[in-house]
Image 1 (cartoon, rainbow, N blue to C red):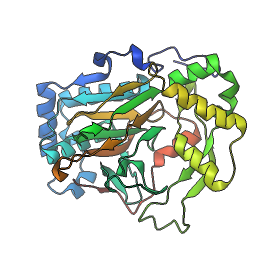
Image 2: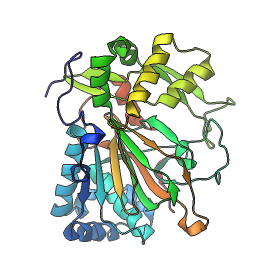
Image 3: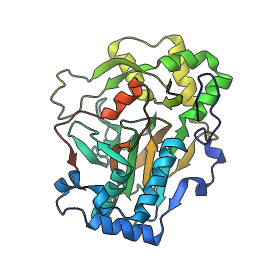
Length: 342
């Protein structure tokens, strides 16, 4: 497979949501696979501090190894996302362990916040109140516009889902590239040049001394090619915040290019919409697919509020990408890797 700049992507990476049947993107785990995952999860050290040193190869079984190898291939060379269904979410601790096993089997976890968490909790910490510009979206109930995160992939495992809202959307950046190439080529240069990003100042980030976060001046290209392969990445809101905070406004072409790509991404024929069910595990390749989330309203019962586990990982055996995209694999600096518990 060789991707050539200026030529459309014609394989399964350039999927359109309207063309996918549920069977195309949902993997229903077999009883054998679930049993093997439970056995592996139960074999982890009792104290999760020991998980960071646990050798996944010593507890890997053939059934799970095949499952995760297929997932890696789909993430790296296929549609760029996998959804595994069939796990029981009623035991949140066992689900947390299984999620850790799956994530480590697919890739290497990286820190995703200033607390150094390699496994974190997705939940609304503000009880629906308005959050500040430096609050991470996954810690609110806000609508999250189409974006990519750090690491090769983001993974999420659902414990409880919101009774209202919280739906998900995915869109192939390869399909978006084809649309831009065919119908809006005037924006290609701006998208290939990319955008600086805003880096949020998180609570606990001892390196931030300003009132607001900082602007990383390195431009992250939306579309880039390296060694015959295309990689993609975009976080629309962080690009907008970088322009606002730095005082360096977008050019007219840059502004229109971002508006164009967001409009296409939100087209019902382009995006795949669904809602994670309790027990669902999903991994999304940040260098191939953007994701979004609807605003949600939590359950009144504290024990039933929306909650997910979250990981950033770098795929085992990942191919090399352009240096700007490779830099995203470093994740976020923190005091040292830690694992959050529900």
